[in-house]
Length: 198
Ligand code: GTP
Ligand code: MG
Image (cartoon, rainbow, N blue to C red):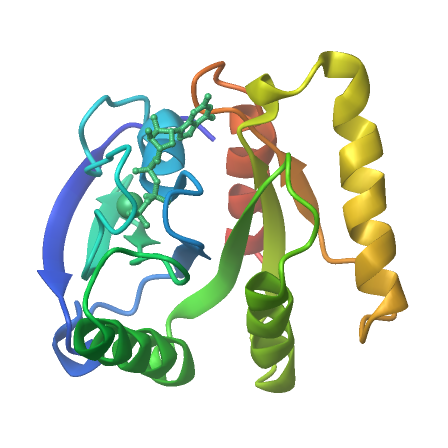
């Protein structure tokens, strides 16, 4: 898919106030600092469309971006170790949950995991929660530049094996990416285009 336009539309903590155009929507979610906002910038070939930071907890609202005037990409706050108060954490966990349960336009979630790490309970629980609500998702492995090329597939295979040992009978679609190396862009955009037309 060629990106012809990518515009920030709005930030929100209330699902009811998210854009009400009936366009297909894709949401990026994962632990704080996993690289969600960086990946969105890489996909859109823009440096600062989504705000990034080395400090976990940068994205704190539901952020809608309109792409090619015909679909939405959504940047969500990270779950996990965001340096925010317990009260704030509860609040945004609540609206993330609401977002996934109420957003009818949502076609697929993308759960981002750092390719260097073993499956983390918080990620596995989140994927199980999506599954239990029938919300389709794919996995995006991030920061592949941090591994030697020869180690990449081994890490991915070990991760997927753990999923199959758990509740999953088949592995979800997955993508190997690096925002700093522009890796996985074509595959991911191709996938979105494909499911957009289904
Ligand atoms: P929150 O909004 O805080 O939940 O974080 P996020 O998931 O949006 O992460 P963000 O994109 O802000 O990136 C976090 C840090 O990881 C930043 O310091 C990025 O530069 C770095 N980072 C993101 N993607 C990559 C990548 O592909 N490779 C490398 N080496 N670093 C990355
Ligand atoms: Mg972010």
